[in-house]
Length: 93
Image (cartoon, rainbow, N blue to C red; front, side):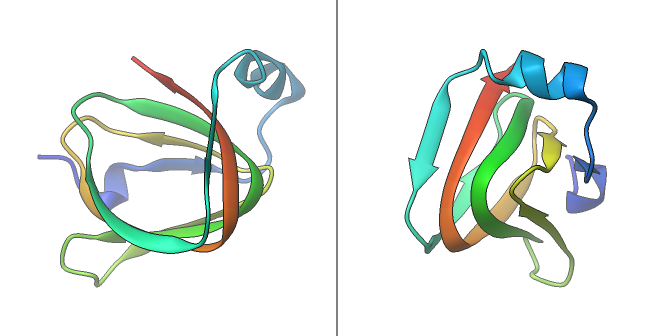
C-alpha cells in the first residue's frame, strides 16, 4: 500500500508541466477535512488555496499551496485538510 512519503510534491514545476496541467479539468472545494483513498494515481496542480494531506495515522503530512504540483499514488489512504478554499487542475492515470 502507498504511503504519504510516496507523494511526489514539486514546489516550482516547469512552465511546460504547468501548461500541460491547464488542459485538465478543475476541481474546487471550500475549507474542510475529509478522508480519501486513491484507486488510481492522481496528478494535480494547485491553482488557488492551501491543503495539508496527512498520513492515515496523522503523524506525517505534505503541504501544498498555489503553484505546487503533486502526484498521489494509487493505494494511498490519507486525510485532506483544506485550510484555504482549494482549486486545482487534476488528471488520473
